[in-house]
Image 1 (cartoon, rainbow, N blue to C red):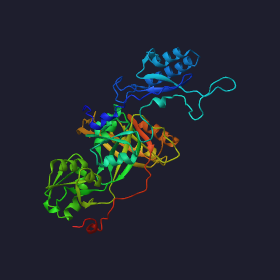
Image 2: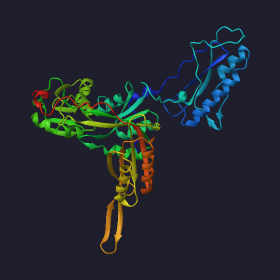
Image 3: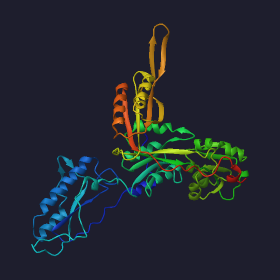
Length: 445
């Protein structure tokens, strides 16, 4: 497995130790201070849930111990060194400083008891408060494959608006970024309406232990980019991702480009390469955002051969989400059988019997046992290819019919794994701009 070499944006993920403001004593705020140098993860949290639970136990015991009235000096000493004398709870060392900060109290009431200011309510500390990966909001760190301007970056922004997008040079690096807590989520493509499945990511879904927590569908709008001042007559080479080249082949021919096609890793990377090397005889197929980022001009807009060009991305996380029934859900599974593909009909029948619609069936070679030999004394030895089957179906794992279907599937298969049960992308259909019938209008050459 390739080692992870984080790009420069990852350095900014190590958050500095927050400043603690101390107020008057007698009431305490439970506050967790992360130290990035205390553990291997850049966000400075414990390596497992036991650390978080231990930290909560320490904090709870500290509250009870310090609610007893003591003199000012005693209280000050407890606050300053309260987290230093506790080494572990139930054998688990904590990886955080747990300082208890007093809150300013108001005037005493008629009973002589102090009270908290009403405009500063304090909530009990929970495991969620210690979790470094926010469930919602704009602070999520989302890994994607490619460079800024890639379609995967746009998909990450659509899935998690205002997130911190982290570029990765390979798909597997994005998986590793989530597993190593460098990123909270990953958004990766799995299929395109014209180019079909991205097989590499299907294989990685099986190799890694991440969970699918959502999907997003992104219309793909290709543009022909070149350096400022370059005309299409000067172009003798067009570079882009292999699928982008295939999706624009007819339009490139209609434009009269007698240019060689050359495949690179991603679309935005092609634009970046041309700009960095000042290649005035080369054009790239990429997004309009890539043109803005790398200072290139758009020679032709909407050059995809089919306007119904949509890529489906999946959102990956370390933990699964809780399936629900109040909105449409989709579930993805992978299975195999020791005796070949004859079990596929029985598996499909389990879903058909319960009126569960399938949206995807994909087969991939069984890496651990790609060939099965069957000896027949009369005709010889037959060689059968072994496959893993990936299926997406429209049902939530919270539904009884889905649970019963998988229980039946498990009886027929030797291996079954649920990759995720997640909300379906129900955004309205919005095809790419342009129309196949008016190529002259969208490509004025």
